[in-house]
Length: 228
Image (cartoon, rainbow, N blue to C red; front, side, top):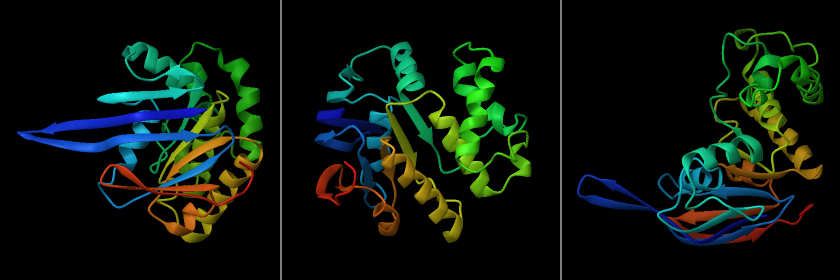
């Protein structure tokens, strides 16, 4: 479903060349919940950016559903991100002037779909994450956990092939974090492919597989069983 073949990413920092990812070859199955762990600077964020089409490898190949993410134009990458990838960020990234339903609708609004057509689906997604009474609330009227649920609904509005979560509970308390992880686990059990970056072993354990990165390379790859 997602495949990396000898994917590497190098950055130039002045005269110094930094290898953020080194010849990583990895396959992620459809319906898998992959937790990616590693210390700061291990390559976690680079890994997520590459499979999300936010960046391209310096060398190697990356595919999502057989579609190459390497060697293509920025416009082609943008379309793949909009239509095949859902993003969940640590800081929610909701627009403060929009309601919850409008924030959820944003990816399809950017595609030119009228809000009147999107709104019923947005409301249904918000209902599924327990926010049926919050659809017309703006971010300032929501708790941190509620804002992250809105962000998850927004990530799902385009029926993405993969959901990418970057430290999704980094700004939440432990009780709210557990609620978000259970929500992600339920999505996985319904067949959603998820790749989550986390530094927390307890969070990683919600996945069906844990990959640990060290110095830009895979140092450990453990299956935890589960749906996938």
